[in-house]
Length: 385
Image 1 (cartoon, one colour):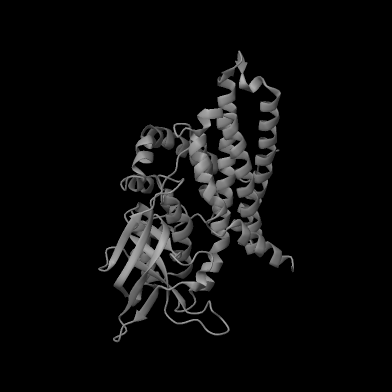
Image 2: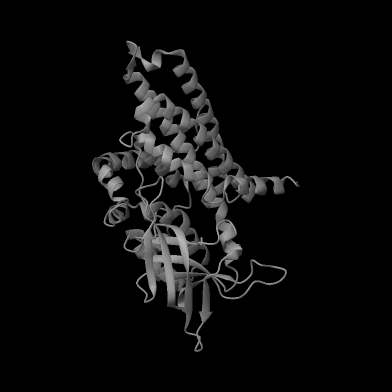
């Protein structure tokens, strides 16, 4: 079926990204994988390439394009090559929407030029050791100082993608206690400078997958955050988080679809080259049937991901639709990647093969951004159930 989501500009961007990955990333990716993170200087290269500024207004050094389609191309091309750009995805998908939605003109002038160049990398810190999907249960606090010039931040966060390299982190903290009739009230967002006294990065977490993505624990001990770094209004943070969740969940859905498509590509190439009992693995009927079924699922996931992308760009993607896209695409990717690894046999379990890394990377898609169970709850509620 003809795909209509991308135009000539997107395809030209795709060619540029594919060449960049093949020349700058693939040759050194094994080193990144072994190190467990992308080198900090790599983000400057992405900045030079214009990756971080596509959706940023021209007055701040960006291209001023109001579309997620270039992000979608990035998802497809990184998955196709079996690589990961570390925390840069969080920088754009999670950091930028909050700046665009909540930052004042003064804040944008301070932050966005360095955001575009990669001089200042951003991350988002919601999850705490004792809270996951229950964001309203967070314990991190931000108390306004007596003279009203700054907040005193105390608490801890965990599972923070991009947390090691981040220069500024959007931290969710309680500025007020919850109300009896609204436990979500009292959360505020702060753009915290990671060079602040009392701010510290704990362990770089040892994950099953996404090995090149620096995920860390963060701690705040009497960190002074200037009032000028409050994002939006006090106590309205939960509603802000809710507004950006559809975008985040679309990103996970589209990334999962792209991973599934890449898995089919890897498996097809492998079974055509691998010989068993004197003939290629691709010659066996079971191989053909398994890959055919996988391709059909990928085609369906692509249609869902593309439809969600168009709705997101039009400002029409609802929370339930985003949840449905995430649930469907991540479940498809889980099934497809597992089957494609099986077709690799024992080699599929070896990290030197991209399918093994893809298998591990994909697993978190059904957990972060809201678990599959949470997605089902959102969808059921939208159905009046």
